[in-house]
Length: 68
Image 1 (cartoon, rainbow, N blue to C red):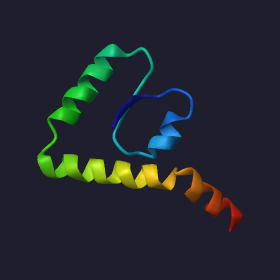
Image 2: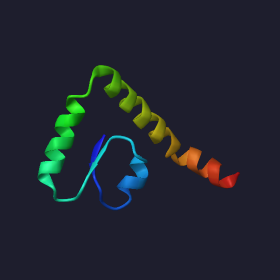
Image 3: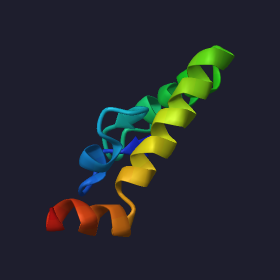
Image 4: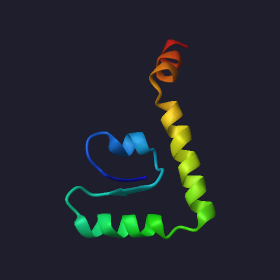
């Protein structure tokens, strides 16, 4: 994942992927380059971590968590 650090994006990403400052085009370019240049194993691990994070943020999982 590559995203800009605005709103609650940092909290959503939870340290997964590349977070760049808002309006910093050089940082965004570097993050995209770095993401595309990751070795296959690291890209696969990043994708898996992103999917796990997305599952954690699923509305049903979130409601279940808060009701416990």
